[in-house]
Length: 272
Ligand SMILES: C[S@@+](CC[C@H](N)C(=O)[O-])C[C@H]1O[C@@H](n2cnc3c(N)ncnc32)[C@H](O)[C@@H]1O
Image (cartoon, rainbow, N blue to C red; front, side):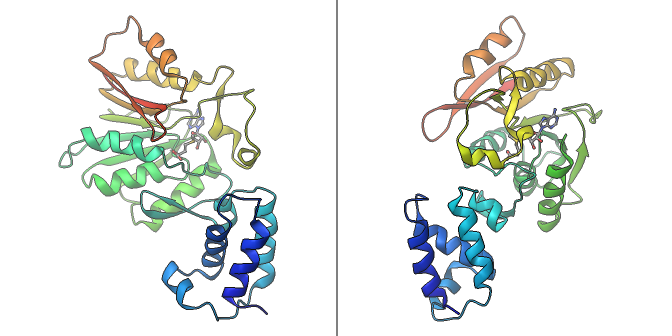
């Protein structure tokens, strides 16, 4: 049996060339297997790893390009650790910006009703509930697998009483009046060629239709039909002109687009 330090060196060598940061991924795999943190890892290199076989199988999966988050069932988002599994999209760092957009205009002391469409792993609703202590959140997803993951995270953070999960198609399961609508919907075109690591993620979370922006447009329709005052939405880097075009001739107060850290258009906030 090998020690933590030996496994660190071995996995780093195995993942060389297969992943961008082999040493970091070796650490993440070992920490997840042993359910330990960074400090423990730094101070226990001589400890023997009992579950070597399992660790070796994880390394093999990673070499085949399976996302490390699905292997470890852990993902970092908004400085916290969430549970993740293949039924739900792996949270992306740029989605933190969508949350910041909502937080910038939500009144912390107001009893807002916030609806999230496409809750996935539950990261957006969880952070919003943490940051807006008086808000009530209704979170919808069409996928039962995603809702299972969201439920696990929401309960783990003790937010079961603040976030209500509902299954259904977009706003169909929500009859309440809505103060803020937020969504990171699927927005990739059905036939767009994707990198192979995305093969592991659910189609329902990625593909928005033939063009890609169909769900965004359905959400925009719902915003006007239901008189929703604020809609914050993530989108594809090339979808700004489509959103602008779709809103031509519609009456609203403000439309603001925001960029991600790479300087690409990534989402918008519509105030009607
Ligand atoms: C891009 S993922 C976002 C997941 C999570 N909110 C995040 O930001 O990581 C989109 C989510 O929308 C859900 N979805 C797709 N079509 C839907 C529909 N018609 N109604 C409700 N949810 C839908 C998918 O199941 C998926 O969980």
